[in-house]
Length: 285
Image (cartoon, rainbow, N blue to C red; front, side):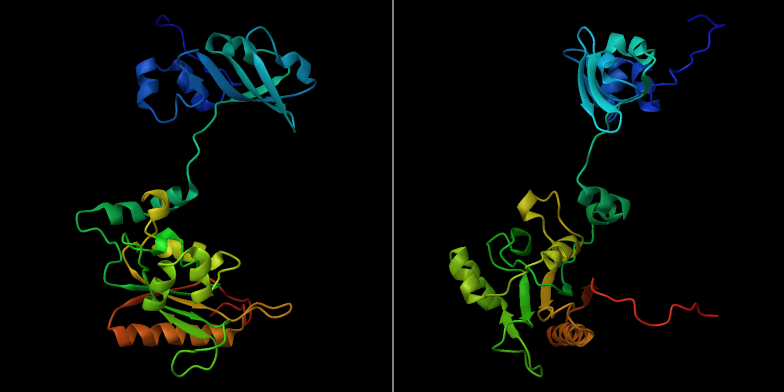
């Protein structure tokens, strides 16, 4: 390219693909994005092609095509053929693939949790309680267990299991950490007979995992926010016909969690993911 020439990117190639084509191999190797879709051994690109008319003209010598619905195709072709391929009349646009990530990791990064946890005196939830009032919890899940296999759950009040309610309450059954640990020490089928609380929807388990899972199931990759906290769980009563649990059960659950925290002398963060749309929607003046 001489001093009078101006580089004009191919308008049919997306910006990242144009950038990758213009970059050196060293620059591509250093980037997390530029080489995604490119095989340096075969010098082939996997690209996403938006095309019109018939798919029959998309192929060619050394070009592999996987047609998709909606006028899209995944095309594998030599890097040296990209410019010529984009000149085909039926090819409207070519896009390079993007790297996918686990949403849990991306969510923690976007909410600035990762740097908070990573600092020298990072916040881990140690010394606090995390409580939920939800659909219950899978207490066998590794993220709610310590390294020795014991439970991080100090209390589990299942409002749907009749038998032994907490003091001052009249429904459900309260399970202590000691009872949960005994269940965990058994084969799972036997353990669940001893502590028969179940999270049938999985909602409470997912919520608690985000708030406080320690990541043992994923080798620490997908741990939650307060991953060294101790846990208190309330499973609300069984949903009735055409209805979720009631606000009375939610209020009792919150009351129980606060009373437990006061009795234990520890601060508590409570997550509530149930709600409703009642009440005025008029803005305040």
